[in-house]
Image (tube, rainbow, N blue to C red; front, side, top):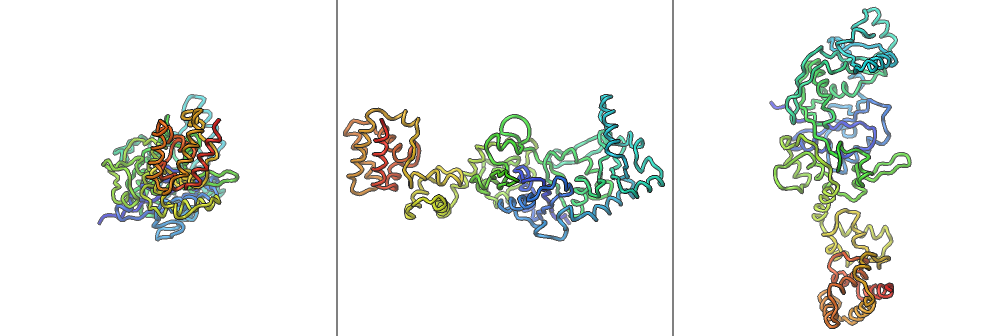
Length: 502
């Protein structure tokens, strides 16, 4: 019988959820859904010194916003809880004692100052200090001390537990993307598994929890690949069946070398968190507040490291659940492209139903206390829809339908205006004033006739009118725009530009 697919997303609550972490959660979620498995959220909060209030909520809210439904977690519960490591201390204590009894780990009593002294001496000799099989018997630990001295020091309580790394052994691990990964144990130190404060280290708690929670696949970032050998050895030490390991490729900076960091958002001008993060006096907008749809955010992140094997790029979450496969993961880094990010959002906005955008526009108008005619909103959305890229662009892209331009684009004025422009505009205002049936086809016809009759370039006339109506030279169909703005308001705007020009 095949083991049920169970995956986990295990973030540390040390700050807001980064989009790199969100992508890891997404790939875990998609793999679980594709295989009718379970998606588990586990909060790895053993390092209480780095704990940040509000972080766990930000993680859970971000997953919820993206539609990544959790099967088991701190708020959902489940058969393998608790789902916060800080609530699993007794389990770690019993397992570390078991590991010591198996002679796979040992007690270490070296102080931080003693180890720092040895480290500095090694650096003076041009060597890298490693606490392992080659020198562990020279330190203050239960392997070097007799039982009486060890028992005495244990009573004092100030000790750590280190893993007993095998001596000069070739460790062969396996990763789904990279295949065989080989490392010599001589390059590894005897990692601390249990700290003097009574808490497990990340490495120990991680392996214990993955085993106890029946995790079948560990899908995590490439930055954890150097830890694979230690985790592999821990499974061997307990004689446990290992999960399959998948180390995802890095998300790279838009330009230059290195992985995408939290600082790159401010540098390049794009969000790096799914949701707004507030800390002290600092407020950083996330994807949601910046106008991105959750569907588009997920779509974009899915294609950073995964290839569907076709030319198709736009996916819903349900489609991703159906299409996702570990076989199509890339093993090289994926470069973050902010423009492509926005393109995905634009594609998903084009799929939004008209009423959804109408409601959004109406809400923006009310918030900004702008008067509007509800009957016109459907026509306005129809005109601006192809130009929308973010949810936050709905009002800026349509503001001229409701409010006269407060400013005119300076470059546009220099490009199309001359000393005859005011006269041309006054003439156009008279034409519009005399249009009986104020519909876009009639508006276009009468302005065309006006331009022809005065031997004026039609394109230049249209540019002047658009500048008057919109404030710049870009926008949707001009004649439909004029119809929606209305006859009286259009005449007023055209005369306003004519009077503004020298």
